[in-house]
Image 1 (cartoon, rainbow, N blue to C red):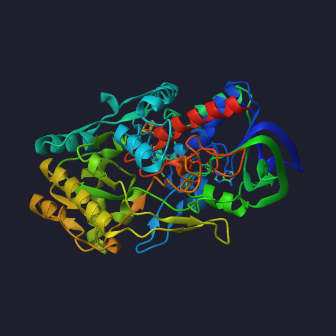
Image 2: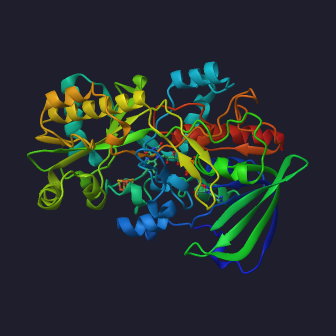
Image 3: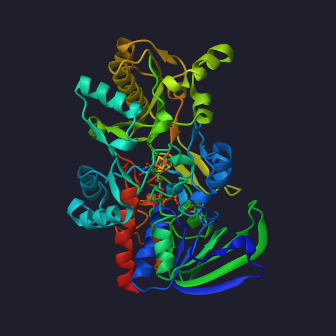
Length: 503
Ligand SMILES: Cc1cc2nc3c(=O)[nH]c(=O)nc-3n(C[C@H](O)[C@H](O)[C@H](O)COP(=O)(O)OP(=O)(O)OC[C@H]3O[C@@H](n4cnc5c(N)ncnc54)[C@H](O)[C@@H]3O)c2cc1C
Ligand code: SF4
């Protein structure tokens, strides 16, 4: 591992200077740091979490969630119901704990960003070169036969029987063994999350990385960004009392869609559009389980390997989501002996996620403590869409031969046949009836050319505050309709090109 400064070991305050300071080392920040460093720019990359790689990853869910997840996995949005939104807090950010699925935002989404939200220069022909660059860096390819197992194959068979289009998922991996623990750190370092790809390459090109350094404030002078102040913490997240003051010609904030707006707010960065923190989309999701007669052994394959894209335009995507027993147990229906009996049949379970592209918009504001106030109330149209998504997922499982399906809906947790699954596709249910999670927060500092309507311009410059940029999922003007990491990285690559030109 290339040397870096672990904040836990810093014994005195540090003063730094650079061309660019990048806050956050996830999908957006790591890419900006690498692209600028590769162009010979002097870059400092700051990350609140620690730096861990495969040899630290034990595949023990509790240990790894404590190590890699923000607030030990307990982050989310308030509403009825509250929705968990897990985030990575480590070098690599949420890419370190994600499933490795790599999709470009569809061209019709990019067209909508141009036509409805006034984004310039980000249609498909403009972004193609950046998508290609990112995919080449990450070794993106469809899941090969060796790691494509029965959970995916059964579902593919069910979808084909119903005439629904789907395909194997393109993933960023080199040497994946299908061990099934992507969401708690890949022990093989096969998944090309940015902590094993862009971050080391940024370091090799000269970027200086500080870990366990939480940026508290962006420094402004004469209305321009001039640097940041960060505080170092030890391995138990207690502040050590040492701080980093980094002055730079440009500041790039890439803390993710839930943490970038609060940092701007706490730093008293002006918000001429009044839109900062609004427009939070999350892709609400429900895991749908299915019991088969024979063993599925879903842990022996890539957990997210097949995707039904037949319904993407209407805002529904259905993709593999097999999880470890410790994470499956809380969502399987029943209590006591009934629950125990279902868990005992874990080897016969299939599991897919039903996700929707949401029109609902939540909000993020700075809170009193470190965690912001995140609010999100799923609207009735999205609740109908989610019921339809779950119903479709269940229908596919039944077509694949499932005996019963676990819907993740409190009022009808177990579905017995395809007719019940089809009825669910038309159901009108209250939001509180769904067992939801969300993995893709986005949209809270969205781009657009009009400073009265958007938080940043189309390249990521914060309107009204020269030398300040945003480079994460906050930039999306609306839901990107697919898993977001590749689009975040493509936009970050483009941002770095614009920023380099200004230096
Ligand atoms: C379980 C799970 C599975 C997922 N699977 C996929 C998938 O397969 N494909 C896909 O496309 N997407 C997936 N995602 C989502 C994807 O990983 C995220 O959308 C993406 O990583 C977001 O990038 P980002 O740059 O916006 O933020 P992040 O990647 O979250 O990075 C933000 C970083 O900033 C740091 N930070 C925050 N505040 C501060 C501060 N004040 N000072 C210093 N550092 C700070 C954080 O610790 C973090 O490291 C998944 C998400 C989860 C939770
Ligand atoms: S399935 Fe592949 S990418 Fe995921 S943790 Fe295992 S080896 Fe890594």
